[in-house]
Amino acid sequence: MGRKGRRKGAKVGASAPAPGRDPFLQQMAAARQHRDAGDWSQAVACYRQILAQDPDHAEANRGIAACLQVNEQAEMALAHWERALSVEPNNVGACFNYARCLHMLQRFDESLARFQLGFEKMKSTGGSLSKTDLADTHFKLGLLYRDLHQDEDEEKCLSRAVSLNPELAGVHFEHGLILGQLGRIDESILAYRRALRIDPDLAAAHRALAMARKHTQFDDELTAAESLYESGQLDDDKRVHLAFGLGKACEDLKQHQRAFRYWVEGNRMYRRLYPYVVDAELAVMDSLRKTFSSAYIGREGAERTAGITPVFIISMPRAGSSLVEQILASHSEIYGGGEMMIVWDLMRQAAIQFPDDLGKLKQADWERLGVQYLEQVTRPMHGEAFITDKLPGNFAMVGAIRMMFPNAKVVHCCRDPMDTALSCFKNSFMGDAMLYSYDLADLGAFYKVYEKMIAHWRKVLPTWVYDIHYENLTADLEAEVRKLLEFIGLPFEEPCLSFYQTKRSTRTASSIQVREPIYQTSVKKWKNFERELQPFRKARKGGFYGL
Image (cartoon, rainbow, N blue to C red):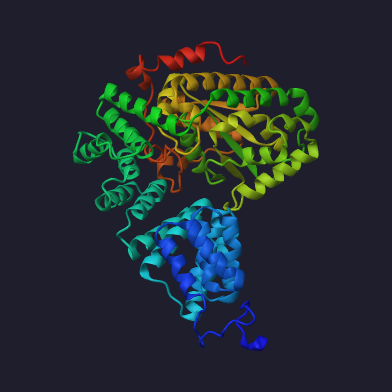
């Protein structure tokens, strides 16, 4: 049989398959059977047997890519999606799955381009997806927009997914989250309720609903959440949502001891899920203080000022930074950038041994890092001269900020330590963020280091850090806002006082509070829990880890 008459990769001497018939039908059927049973390794083995004989077998490449992607082996999956698309370039399903794979690898811009190409192919070729698959595609594209911080686009995609397939509780829940972040609180509450009608056991939706509402009685929704919490049906990773949601509701109802019991249980469960030792984090802070001395800053700090002025809002978590950013973002010259990990990411990339090697960087290095920072943060701006970065943990990076940006503005949000501790302890931040906050003694030790860091910056960078006190801000908003804007170098604007009307996305635990006019009900709230908070107070005042 001549080469032209052979399927590419077929063995010489093999009997020719019937025209149009796939010679690997049995192996493909076996692979699909293993996939349906969740036996991914056996499915991959079957696909590999096929690809060993025919590397361009499009369906086998799609199948093995899907298996690898499900098992978070995105780098390996990527090559197979590319091979499949080289054979079937108009396969829109493969194109969308390739886009999702790029998203998993955090190649966000490439992923977005592939999603857009997939929709273009659907129009140009007449290709289509089932309604269910199209809903899932819009959902996944919405999650990509979330990572790209394109909130309006995210909401549109999730809304489209809901309309295409209204029976998916998880999509309603995610839609509720972005609606809440955009300040559309009533719509977000409806989305959470729709999710719970479909899946009454969706613990994260119970929590989000409890956080979004003001409770005046222990109603049917809270009773359902409490029954689920006590049922023993859920693992800790789900029960922790219920514990924090029920705690918040009980606090609304002034059932303080009951609220604190839920918070204690939620924090204990979370600490079991994410074991943590505070000492290592405290050692990093100690190294940063030693690195950023006044001598080093004066010798190697950047001298060139950036065209855009970054405004870093630093604090302990839950100390008023979201409120301050919302006020500033209401000014016509300030873009609210939200919480960004970029300073920390750049520092870890710049230092082979982080943080000890930061002291080896020279002035040119710091100026280059400043350029890289601005390249990442300024893309969504609309001509504003200032941009805020309100990651609370940047309080440890003030030295690095000064090294990159001599013209930066640093605003330090201060709040009563006991109120700060209470607010941290009653809020689960999810993921591996703020792990010190799930134990009151660890929180107290961390707070003491935070105070030591702030004292260090005041010493080596006098007058560079501006303090704004939450209690003063809530007592006399206009006076404090005028002083804050004067520090930044901007004229006063009235919209800063009606900040709660400013339409922008807020991705923090305070996303609901910043939509409300200023209030003082959170001042001295810790007095309702004075006895329970003593472990924090003792650790903050006591000795600390040899630092």
